Structure formats: structure tokens, C-alpha cells
Image 1 (cartoon, protein in one colour):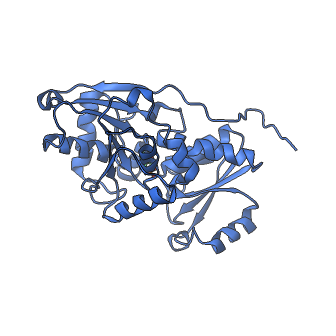
Image 2: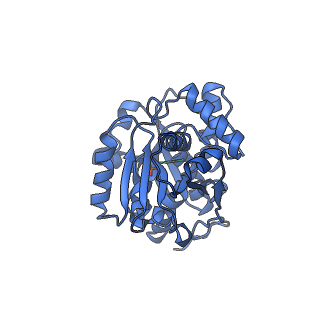
Image 3: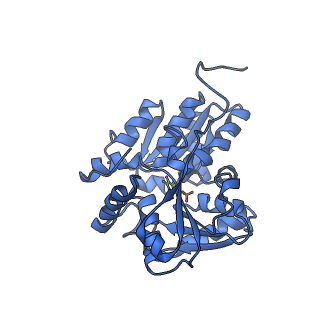
Length: 315
Ligand SMILES: *Cc1c(COP(=O)(O)O)cnc(C)c1O
């Protein structure tokens, strides 16, 4: 049986994304060239790397004849926000299993998800920890019926194929590619798309060295042996995942003033701050051509205001 939900289409369509040069006296002084790939512009409501992580997953769900997507996330999750929009656009139902029952269930991210028709299912933090167990998934299927499962953060083999398409022909000339790391799925996809002699630099938003092992596991599970060089930086977490400091907020404000490009405090702000730190410490040889990937996440700036009262730039 082939149902056609009015506005449904088969695939997510990207808008064109710009690669913009960033001009600044410090780059001149250090004799490096820096550009930013504006993935935050790829889609009006399926932003940044999440567009690439979701696109083949949703196509696969459709091919399997599965009309419901189920996934997991925190209260301000970019992944939840993007999945709700993308599923709605493709005429798929979506269920978001959200960590924490005590949270404000009306925050801007969850309000958007609900607007897009996502059914929100709140569970305790304790229960949330079991989310990868078979028993827990069976219980969810008892409650909701059959669904196509996308893990928290959206990282799986199809997401890695999707993110391997972020870098294109026009990015071959860059010596360094910089991106932020959450689960490491995007980093793995970029590693797959890397050219010989290119250096991929990931900046972790999480505190701790465990991320190196985690990325290694994603790479080996997906049989990715990059032809370029991989490097992970763990010094710019600003206190840990979803944590922040006044210095980070000041940096995001400064970057907006200098370049008129908004950053988010969870991922891109930390990555770009980490990058400037390395520039100041002369970690890039003269003549380096560096591409910073803006992975999106700007929906979270409204949530950040909701949480802290601090207004961050948005477009
Ligand atoms: C989800 C997200 C990331 C992290 O991506 P992973 O594939 O989980 O490493 C980075 N930046 C933004 C803006 C995100 O929303």
C-alpha cells in the first residue's frame, strides 16, 4: 500500500552552502588563509551536520516502508530539532524520547519539535541510560508499534556516509579541515571524505580523553582508514558538554562583531575558540589553508537564552 501524505517528498533537498573567506589581521600576521563552510545554511530547519546525518537514514526508513522514526535526545538537542523537521517534511511520523522528566517541556527546542508533529516521550535520566538495551527497545515497540530507530546524536553507518559528502571538489585545496565533535560521527564521515595530505582536526565539546577511543571505535567499526591525517583536540570543552564560561560567551560575541557569523555555545563556539587558540600559539605553518566547518546548532541559541537569560547572536 502506497500512502502519499500531501506534502511528502522522497528526499531532503539541500540549499546551496557558501564557503566564505574570513579576513582578519591575525591571519595576515601568521600568513594563513581561513574560510568557513556555512553548513548552518544547508536547510531552513534541518541544520548543519544533522542534515547530512539524517538524509540517508530517512531515505532508508522510507525504502523499508517504515512510516515512523524514533530517536533520543536531551531537552535542547539539535538532533531532536532536526529530526522532527526532517521527518515532517518527508511525511514521516516521529517520536522523540527525551531525557529527564523534570525539565521544562515547553522550551523552544521541544516546542518546535511538537510543532513539527513529533510525539515527545519523557523518561527519567535513570531510564534514559538503558536506551541502548534490547529490552528497552522492545518496551518502546510495545508502546509505539514498529519504528525506524535512529540513535542519540544520529550516529550510525548511514549518517557516516551522509557526512562523508560534506567536503566536495572545491575543498580539496585546503590543508586543514576543522570541525567540532560530539559523538564523533561527523568526524568519522569527514575522515572518510578526506584527501591525501589533508589534516582533519576535531575539537571535542566533551570533557575527557575517552572521546579518542570512541572515535577510534567508530572508525574501525565502519572500516574507515583515512588517507589524510586525523587529530583530536580535547582542550576546549569549557567545563564539559553543555557547560560554558563567560570567556566562551565573550568569544562568540567577539566573533559575531568581527565576522557577522553567529556561533552556538555547545559546539561551533568551542571549536572556533579552540582554533583561534591554536592560531595564537603558532600551531599552523605559514601558507596553511584552513577550512572551519560551521556545523549549525544555532537553534540552540534560543534555548540558551531560555536557560540562562544570555542573548547570543542569531541570524
Ligand atoms: C550534533 C552536532 C555536532 C556533533 O556531531 P557528532 O557527529 O555527534 O560528532 C557538532 N556540531 C553541531 C552544531 C551539532 O548539532
